[in-house]
Length: 388
Image 1: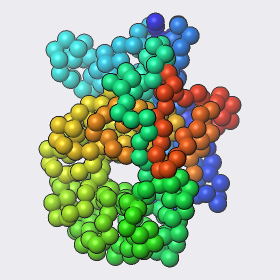
Image 2: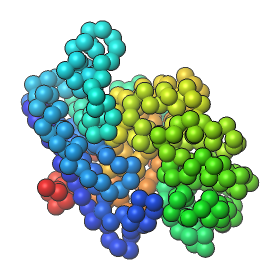
Image 3: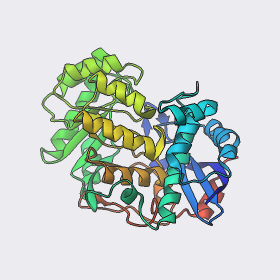
């Protein structure tokens, strides 16, 4: 089997005004992503997803160009089933042959950002092809799934202190969720204002629902520590991205000063970033985004590192259907993964991009058992939302 074509497409879907939310990222008026498709001479095609932002909107000119004009042409004629070989070759660039021969990486200068996002989308599509070629789901190729269903948490929570409780309770009612996550941070104005919203949320939910808080990396270390003190009695399941991803030592300070578990990783690239988090003892829960960190191949390496450090993994799944499905397969196959993120914001890239649905029942998600990623792209949706 040989690759005949690699194409990335920027998809941009407007979000209706009544479904838009406002956070530190601003108002989410669109949902954007790069859809990757790889065709083969065997008539099998795979799909993947490359992201340049952990949030909904983003400018995808760069990553689409990397895939279509730099990485893609060099993949034509290669066997798509040699996934590890392709990953190492793309990561090390013109020195890829050294990496394969000598057993260690020779990374190109662009070892973060758009280049790794591009590798992520390509890698996910290659695993989709491999699964389809063997008529088996990706999780089976990764060692099998530990369960047919996994717990999920509802991810959203932008309402003010007066309304956050009702918003989160509506999430619980919608899918029987046993856990919910809300957004806090700089857009609240102060750590005290964020704490006020969290305290209101806990009072409304009661003790039986797990509650997480995500600051999107917008606090300073002192602000994060102040917030932790103010919500010390709220029994948070985790405090996500207290400080900037560039301040890993600061993150370690926050973790050392609180009993609240610390989660992070959605904007980190490759196992090397996560190795640093582990060595600094900066997190309890690692959150790789498969469309950012390096795809399925790299996510499994990250999960192995987490398991060796006795840490847990909760993939960042605020994404389109290809990255979301990839995250489900990795979570099912890795002993380190314990819970799945389920977006309750407006997300047409999950609910409209593919024919399949991902229903939540009793707060759990079914792990797909169809070949490959188990998704079928709706071509009409792609044509309607293709951005030139």
